[in-house]
Image 1 (tube, helix red, strand yellow):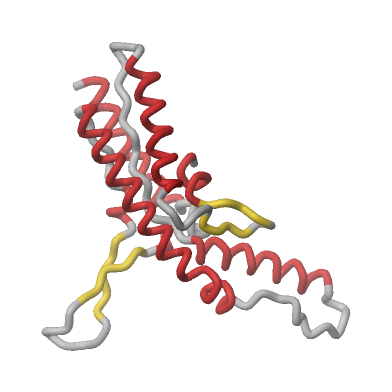
Image 2 (cartoon, one colour):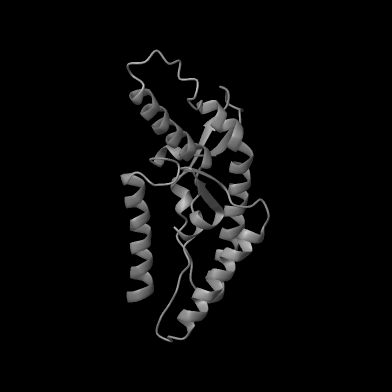
Amino acid sequence: MLVAAGLTRDKNGYISLRSTSDDTVQLILDKFHECIDIVKKYPHSKITILEIPPYSIIKYNQKIASKINNKKQNNHKDSNNNHTDLVAQSDIIDKYTEQETQLQQQIVKVNDGIKYLNSTLGTKSPCFSIHLQSRRQRSRGKSKPTEKYINYNLYSDGIHPKRLLAKAWLGQISDLIQKDCWY
């Protein structure tokens, strides 16, 4: 995943935001421009840049922490260790909440750039994030507003889609290919 690798970095299994500036966003969009320039050399070819669905640094790192904690606990089963070296899920939330917010803002900026590039190419990307959007009501009552949120439970780890979501995305891509190539 070009963009996941571009917006975030991996260190000791955990991911974090690569940069808080928009330089990374611009670098990614510049790479897309390079791809477009390559494809333009082939007049019968068409390119559509796919938008990026939101993904979660927190959920991914919680999954990694859980795996590491389980491994540590299994390695020390017979000892009377208190496991003070285990990573608490709340520590992950505290450490990565601001980065998660910034990541979502960067994804929106990259997607805005992708929409613009695709419009100049006369094409449009499927909206993968539509499957992740949900609403919930904070309190009961007729006039209580609902709030939008991203349902990261459709990912196996905050980044990789579960089977059903992957099938939905594949269906969207297949529809796009059919439309662009045969109609």
